[in-house]
Length: 347
Image 1 (cartoon, rainbow, N blue to C red):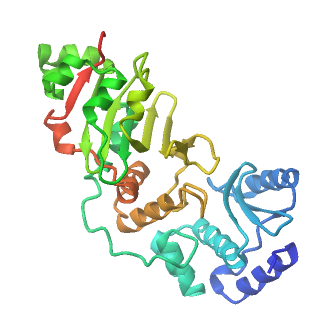
Image 2: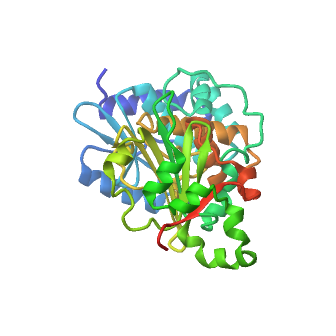
Image 3: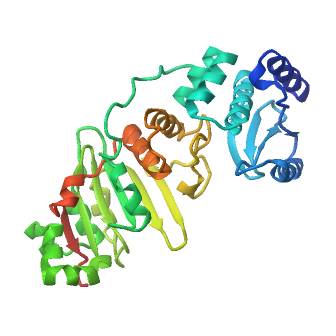
């Protein structure tokens, strides 16, 4: 059935009338053009309390419903009427406050499928909710989240993965970036750089250094400024066999923290452009629902429900990256200075 303004309004009225949690919740403003959406979004921002910009809907001529927070941030697009009703209810109930468990329970009372859907973080009914994580979320990758926001130990956390059965050579990668070949060949560790003059020399030069190694399927390279001439040998870089890469970059002075995911040489971002981690708010999916990064939406929701003790959204997000993509960093190696390290060559 093609969705129109009338079918949408009638369906929401029937759904809201039959369930106490939705009493008094009106259909969000519905626009049929970009100009109308901008006008309605501005009104919604003016009348919505708190940080929520308010949900507005844009109805395309083909019946696609696009959910927007503000005039420019599209958060979902679907032609499934039940999904639209669910997303309206989710936004309304979440906006009332309460824990995520309470939101899930409220949605489940409206429709058990909706409760399961919220817990899974997805839009469809596939994928049963797995057992709780059951381990320390601050191991793996999330241990670094807080210090990374202050640019410690490095502003850029880069990860690289090859096709199954292959690994990206960490030494070759570091050399192509410009790591000192003598230190790479010598197997220099972070503690070796820190040992000079009781660490003062490294304190002065740490912005010229990098750390590298492998954790699970991923090869990592952590650094601040990339030296001029990095990747000059494009053929050698291609020979590494990189299929996927993840970049987390921090510029704390400007409060800019970004996530970039490349797969098969293509940016995975649903055409959103720069993906800032500051967009992530607990309880709200950070990326387009049903989009290419929806797997991360699901992982974030599971992290939120599994670890209510974590109040830091960056720790939750990093734990979700570990669960969904397998990203890890060896905490003990960094703590004991055993991680491989080098200065940029010629510095």
